[in-house]
Length: 106
Image (cartoon, rainbow, N blue to C red):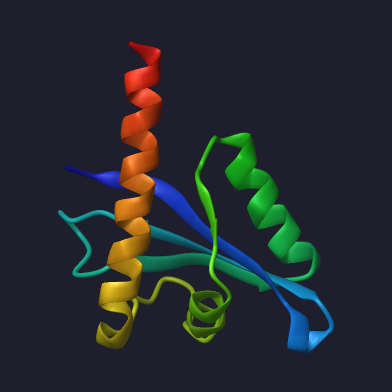
């Protein structure tokens, strides 16, 4: 199965003057060894990433700790092994949302 949609994480870092940060993840198991950072930014860029996610109906999950970790990864790089389990939980959350949405359409 191929997942080719952006996965967004956003948060407001209370210790960093409320700066909004967003990171978009994507994963194609046929091409990628692990999820990859597709977009990342703070402030206005973060707002645009979130806006695009909403425009395309992509689930958004707030996770301050994960957002801080993902913000350190370069665009198009895969996530490090240390984040596999946390990101797997996020993808599981997204799959549950998508499943629920599909059941509601039936």
